[in-house]
Length: 203
Image (tube, rainbow, N blue to C red; front, side, top):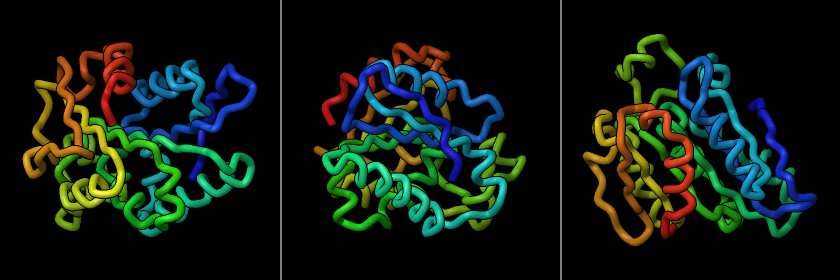
């Protein structure tokens, strides 16, 4: 798993954020969020989904990569707390991987943010993914989101004009918060509004 790092302006931090992008080529949302998190004092890293999932992956494979990411930072900063963010393709796959983490590693997860997660997730990029058309082998995301929210705070962000996605099969509860923002899949490209909503959330 190849990370693009965005260093925080503070000399030391125990707050880390890992962002799994959508399957687009440019990933403006992932980049914009990484810059804003870094500006807020997080050590930010992002993963380009189209590159990572160009080859077929599995939830187990992805989970092991995230384990390595966490353990390397915990070795250096034992008090580290992690926020995980997924957008679109990344939001669909992320819950599967996080659910497979050990209880000890999950203790270091502060929050999970899922932006526009699809109802089904593939663990390989197909060109049809750009049209939100999953394959027959795609896995339902709602059960994984539900399971994750039973142990960790999950923020589900969606555009008012976007496809329904996984939220059609989920109900909010104490650990599962829903936030709707103006716009479609790209949330009107309002990255300041998106970041403000994330930081303001109760999770």
